[in-house]
Image 1 (tube, one colour):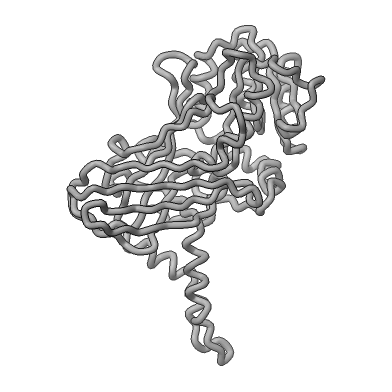
Image 2 (cartoon, rainbow, N blue to C red):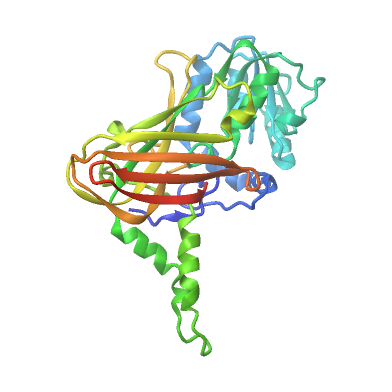
Length: 360
């Protein structure tokens, strides 16, 4: 197992570093303004190949496309190369918008790709007419899919710019969960706060602060590269929750997401330390079978890796006990992200353990 990475708002540049954001959207824009971080996403071949396959199979010939959060412009360029007549490349980070414009001109897409250096909600009617877009494409996903509030931006764009019957890519997604055993994880995380265990710091006892450090630790998202065989339910059998990314008409639909899943029987009894989370995105409407971008532990490694939600206490479960996980995700506008609450309960023994609130 790789060393867990803590505080995983956003995504990790390939292959082993992690980024940290401020509690305002400016933090995202500052991060994306650095070419080394754009490079990290472009180096993720699984990510780029999934979008390439979708855009090459989608009905883009002569279409008008909107790419939300275009970054370097790669998806806009792929859409243009697939036959789009016009591509609105929306990018709110000024330095990255300039980068996308420069790359568009350098690659001969200057007449097709129009960079719009704004947030979606600030675009004027003169810049993009209402109902003029045939296809919306975006990649605004975080480690547990929802962390960057990208679903709200897509729904806002769909409501205003997408023509009736237009296409959203990706169109659907699934949040997936699997329990794991790893007693060393909690110990490893506690060791990171051993400074506060000192009882003789210039003659002062700091250990009273240790519970606060541990409490704050439990609010952090753990981003890790998880081995499939370390999970009690293999990825292919793990239950999930379906999200219709193209369906909602109001951004407020995404303020709260709650669901419950029941795990199949496990191969053995276990003392469960936490739950692993990841997501799959499906490009429905872009050929058959629909291309898939998966962040599963069984799929090629991506910039998102996987989430590990550490329980407040281990939960014992026999192989055939009924094991149920409940998730509540609530929008945190102050952080431009979500807070996550998880409960894992053994319906056979009536015991439960919890995690959260975890800041995604």
